[in-house]
Amino acid sequence: VQHIVTPGTTIMTCNIVKDLDALPFPYRKTGGYRLSARRDLFRPPFATVVASRGCPYTCPFCMSGLLRKGHYHRRSLSNITEEIVRLQSQHNVRTVVFYDDTFFPSSNSLSADVQSVVQSFERLTEIYWEIEMRPDILIALEPHLAKQLFYVGCRQINVGIEKGWNKGRQTIGKSVASEEIRTAIEKIRESVPLMRLTGTFI
Image 1: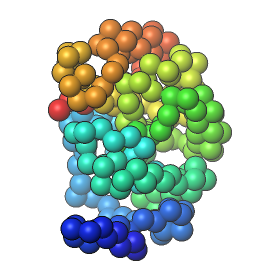
Image 2: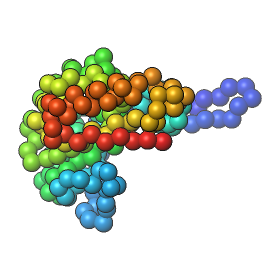
Image 3: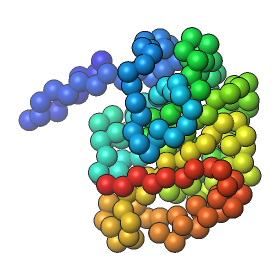
Image 4: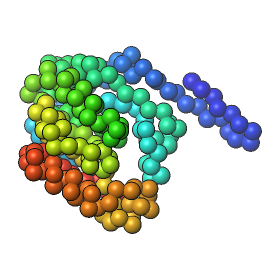
């Protein structure tokens, strides 16, 4: 626990866990839960999984990155895979929804990150999963990478478009133009027709 004190301000306490793999898997109760309409598209039973804490970005409309002051930590892929295997064996889970603000943190490392996910998730069988993705990372997702994600079970990408017009996105610090997003979506649809792409808006 860190206590941050500056003259004339109140004490702010931050509890930052860096080694997320050291945390136990969450308690699971079967039944009684439903996904939101845009996510509830696949085979039940489902489970939600969180692969990281915080966000490497500080969008002015979102508290995820702002609350943790830029602290961002991810679980290892082996730890995530272990949790999914346990969900399958103990609860017969067939669909996983990743609730991270962005499953892939950077477009610069996207190719390597996708390869790592594919290598880790190849051991999973009979599982579908979906993720959240930023538009700037979506436009860096080459067709062959999308195909590899689909191969290991990714069936839906939820894109944080936020505003339907360029000026609106610029107002909230989003620089990717509508035309770029549309082109990226069309490119993925052509190469992986069964991949579902949805948009989130504020």
